[in-house]
Length: 112
Image (cartoon, rainbow, N blue to C red):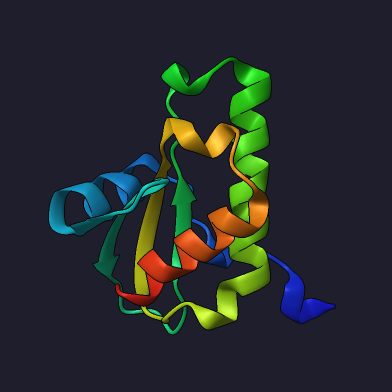
C-alpha cells in the first residue's frame, strides 16, 4: 500500500518551486500536455499540476487534476527520478480516454 501513495514529498506545492521550474527548466510538448522540468538534487521526482481556467469550470478543472494525479501516482516509479516536473494539460485532456492520456504522459516523461 505504501508504494502506491502520492506523498507530499513528491509534490511541488509552493509558488517559488513552480517559478523555479518555469525559469530554469526545459519544456516538452505532446498532443495532450506541455511538461516543464528541471533537475533537482533529490532522490525522487516532484510533480506539480497547473490547470488554466480556460479549460473549463471548477468541476472540469478538478476532474482533470484528479486524473493527472492518479496517472502520476500509479506510474511514479516508471518516471525518471531527480526532476521537478510541472504538467500543463491542453484542452483535449477533458474528453480524452484515460489510457490514451496515460500513454501520452508517460511517453513525454520518459524523454525528460
